[in-house]
Length: 331
Image (cartoon, rainbow, N blue to C red):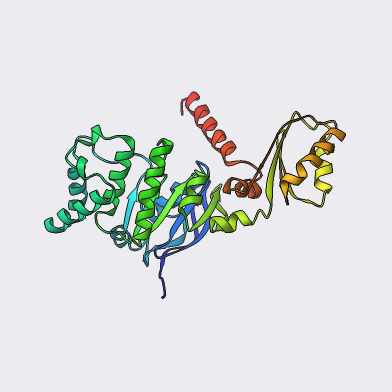
């Protein structure tokens, strides 16, 4: 069976006032695939989505959605897609049913088709019993589910979910994941942006890790984690002032990878649990105080660390700090 390319981009680029937000991105997403764009805030995920959904015009490069060029055939692209934005976009003074009906009318759906679709999508996200309740009385999770239902009203070929669980508690986030899994089984092509590692790992068939507007790695979550090739030992120290500890670890053949971030070392090690005692001996010899040692199997967080040299959480903090500085300056 031959699947078409639901998404195809070639050197897709977007610049704002001399700043490159998306830098020559090449993507191919297959029909029926659940594809994730994973990266910190400010990495270029949302800008990429906005170009693919015709909300922004590319500076250069090209993009096709369901075979339609986003610059030359924007109306055809819009008819082919559904979108769930980061920010809530449902009308709080309307009921859930009224929100869905309004959206369907915007797409020119006939009354009979609207009514049938409304019942179907309400059932899919388990909101039938709340259909006639004003949205302002919905919880955050219910609003998110209604937005997913709205995005499916006109039976789109491709559904874009931009940070669909942002700001939700862990339990509600899990329930949203379950609904997304159901959509995946129905054959809907889904493009998901997220900065939650666990979310990308649990949901996606393939993931593109994006940082500073560039795709730095791509593949299935298992393939990306296998690229680490070892267990991860994290060693937090009080400091390594003369660099002896770092130097010793870099020379050991059984350590496949060494990353240092402040006073924390991330080590790629085969059979990690057997090597911890030896690491303790090396630290003692180098007169380095060990504060903590943890052993874990590779995660997508480790993949990000491997390719960027920093943790995604650190980047999140930097972005938030920059935003606070801008506010303090009155921008």
